[in-house]
Length: 97
Image (cartoon, rainbow, N blue to C red; front, side, top):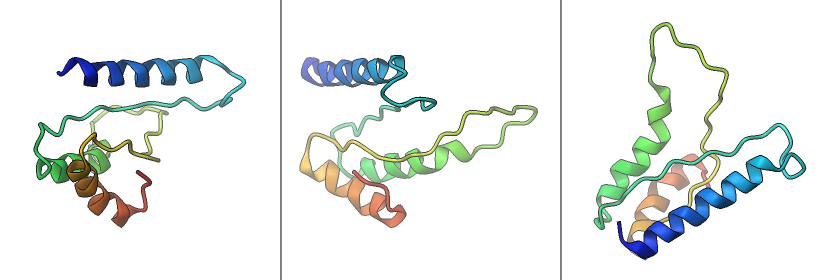
């Protein structure tokens, strides 16, 4: 991971932790995140975006969790190629980027 990109990831994690730790900001709501790599190849972004949307639909026997995982927004990649590829998939499901 490039140092600059790693700093962006750390800033995101810090911000989400700060929001989740303050009950006044979003009471009874916990934000989460998943970080995916485009491997500097915009075409792999299609597969990654589809995986992001449909990975949470796996059936796991004898497992029940009360945590609901809905994708409500996506932060795009640093390159415009990556962001465009993601937008092509996400717009079909009306997920903001």
